[in-house]
Amino acid sequence: MRPQGTLVVVDNDHRNGEFAELLGGSSWAASQGTAESTNSWWAQRDAVRTEVMSEWRFDTRADFERVLRLEFPPHVADPWLADHPAAQGLSYGYVLFSVDGAVTLEAAGK
Image (cartoon, rainbow, N blue to C red; front, side):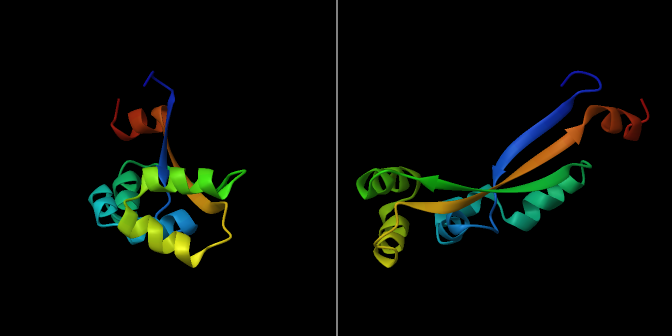
């Protein structure tokens, strides 16, 4: 990061949206950490947390199923798809963590 620059990191929101529900049901997603551990790590670095709600939307159910199965293993994707038979998308929250380089340098005493 350049001096006086801003670092912005985009992460999955583990709290909001249907995608977050799928993450919560996936054992492999647990290795990414919890919302609390991620938020704590960024807070220790004086990051600003901004939530953004979005969605995945597809023209066909088949396209949606293909993408969901790329993101999640069958034991996670298939039950969700069965519970949402008309879905052609889902709600997806993401989080922006931003760290201002000037603030970081000041905090470091430089």
